[in-house]
Image (cartoon, rainbow, N blue to C red):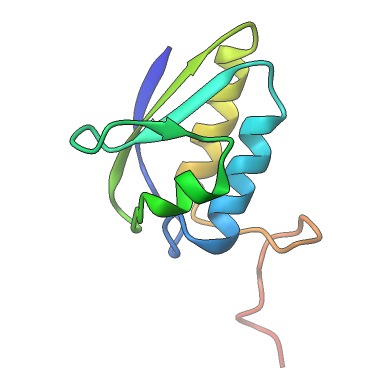
Length: 100
């Protein structure tokens, strides 16, 4: 199974979004890969591989999943990639713009 999506987090796939993607990919009994069509795919369960892609906000990536949980893994990873809201370490959305 595969999909192509546009990366929405402002940080692209760096730091927190990349870490969250790796954690999400590891939750499923599936092998998930991600990459640009011209660069090939890397394993989505490797922080070094994901962050090494240097994917920026607004770029398109291809996500491929194989295995028993492939559809659920693909849904979760693609939802994460297409959500503009980055999550804080406690799991809540970063709604700090109105903070005093």
